[in-house]
Length: 389
Image (cartoon, rainbow, N blue to C red; front, side, top):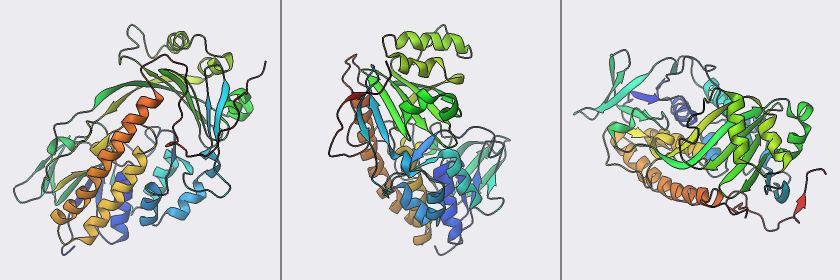
């Protein structure tokens, strides 16, 4: 780029951070604005499988691939699928040395990216109200303290409820018809051996019709649980979500008739339950070019969480930074970036929507589905029960 642009990234998630890292690696200064008070102000979510054709490409561009591999868990590429009777009907494992989708805790990956940035890059506790384009091709950020700052490029990397998105689009996330209720187990191998046996080294899903129980093994013996079901967003009407016993009773009623070993996921979990209704943006979500403003990750293409969102955010961030570095003006960079990102996001969002329908059909049929798009395999093992008794 012929002159050094003033760049602000709103949001210190994975996509925004990798964008900042690639820019700094090429000598381009950048400011990241994050409303969280500090890096430890909230839990960062579960485990991520980082794909070789998307997320890993971004980490290579950031010069962090080897450090990522040192933290990742290739053995956690394992998938197990059960029916509601706790019969194992599919078990997929990666070959020895396969690094196509190694897992890493989201918090570990975020810390890796944060530690790679120059000190002071992230302004913590800095909340943005809006972004507006200016006649000269720049953009103005409106902060919550009523101050403003002008930048040559504002990047909305601020997730599902982006404050930057309205500068480009009127689209708002809509409920996808599916809710996840999150809980967890700690020290699972010692304290909950039955749960450890069900989840194995990676991810398990027990499903029947419009309901499933999903568990993912994280590092240090931590397992995250996602009680996932299709239904109204107000499924908890009349229920105090802070009343753990009441929520547990409501969920157990929904899974009546499932095998006892699976119901233990709901009975023995630790801590409370977190309600996480699933929201998505329209497909395709696009906009007319606006000088000085763009989006990446969930701010641009919020879609069902079926394994591509974080990877696309990472790839978006790296490609946007490379476009800025490789083009003479911000306008030219955005033309190049959005020309690739928007059609790719539309294709991926269509696929994710179809996959969600397959995994969470609006039916009570017991037929379990585990599409090959999640983990390609040529052979299936014999079905066999894994519960005792």
